[in-house]
Amino acid sequence: MIRRYLTALAGISLLAACQPTGGLGTSDTRTPPGVDARADGEDGLIVGHRLMEAGEYELALKSYLRAASEVGVNVDVLSAIGSANLRLGRLGQAEQILRRAIKEDPTFVPALNNLGVVLMEQGKPAEARLIFQQAFAQDSGQTDSIRENLRLAIAQSEANVIQDPQEEPNFSLVRRGQGQFVLLSQL
Image 1 (cartoon, rainbow, N blue to C red):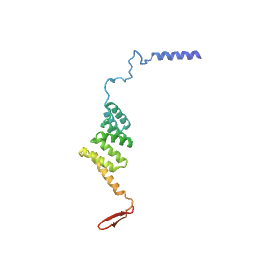
Image 2: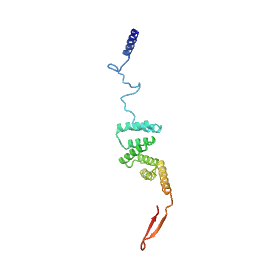
Image 3: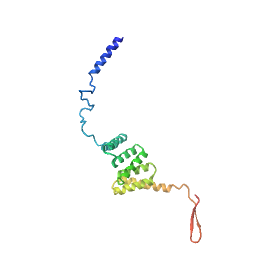
Image 4: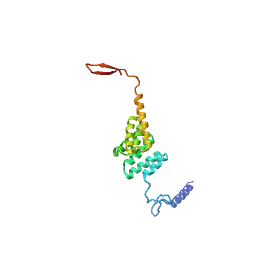
């Protein structure tokens, strides 16, 4: 029994010795055939944009983070990371990153537009309206989606102003001296 075990072990060892190990004298670099390992990779932003179009938001985010490590953290990268977080439903993270992008470049229209969308999603239409107005002004009104976002934010913020009062306030005008009146409310 032990003899069979030792024979099997010796056979396995012999087979293992015949396999390339990547040590000295071999050139196995684990690169698939037909791939030039010395060539530069595709730009992380471009890959990320393609992944966003394909609906692969998590992979796009990873690609944008790779781009940040390659080209540095600039307004393009911050806006792209914020956009991916928005699509992933991470509104708090998206808002922080997009605000950082706008701080870096207050005229960057994609970051302004995406921040407006985040604010709308968070139920802040009045602030979103201001952001969309900035994006619309910077874009000179040329982009239909920004125009539509601004229109929706205006409608939503005006609807909130109209719908906010739950009960009809009771005001009374009281005379205080000669020619002075005070408006009192019973809220």
